Image (cartoon, rainbow, N blue to C red; front, side, top):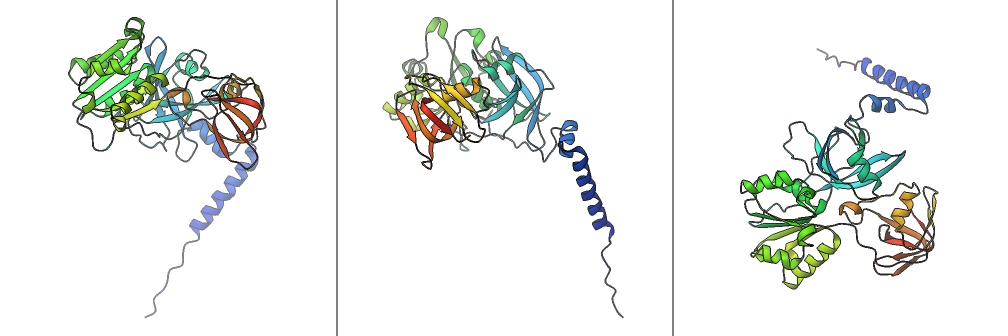
Length: 366
């Protein structure tokens, strides 16, 4: 008896070819807008497209801080508490990117994430997000990243030291790590009303979940290492995470190092302070073709953004090195130290645009 080998049905190849022809025809008809662009209009959060999110709610925390609840696109990957994301938002026709810590509870039933933004005086993006964004707004997202997280082997005793919006990554940790049972949080803000998440933190303290120490700088002055040590007698026994202004973190690091505890301190840094100026010049961006006239006292990041150039950055939320770019040619001055860095084509020098000003004509690979 001879076996008959079935032939493959021509239906599937024919259908596939028909689909491909239909897509090519649709592209011709809709050019320069592609069919995928129309799909994005209908379902911008679908899988396989640029990662976006839709703002579902804006919850005001203080007079100048708000939490944005965002429904991320289908390709969003779960984050680790303490990490941050870059968010892209269109402000006055220019897309700008900033980095913000995630503050959401990972057990949310609706799958949404949240960031909490503090409006910075003169900050285009932060003020836009806090004061102008409304539910329904679409934003662009990157996947979460960052090393300001708890280790897999949880420490028995934890100390958090935060100031201002430095509380945001810590809030993400507190909301997602109920297993921590010996936590001290020392937080600094101008007044009780300026404490972001104030009601929630005080409720955690009332239940005994954390020991909360608030320092209100309008009446008690700035937080310093000696003050922290006085408030936390068992400091040497605690693994410490600190987030806030650079001056505070530098002082904490110096104190911890002097006490032999440097390895037990993890910091997330805000933008460095400016300490020097230079002569300025023309800044050229090789890929975009943009040029900016910048003075010697203004960071290249600020000068470029003011001129409408979209720049990579995470500095304003404590995420260092999000703004680094290759210096192709010319000279820049480090505003913290006054040191001048020069480059010739092919040198491959990397500079931080948030603390570097033009020291003559220069070009950056961007």
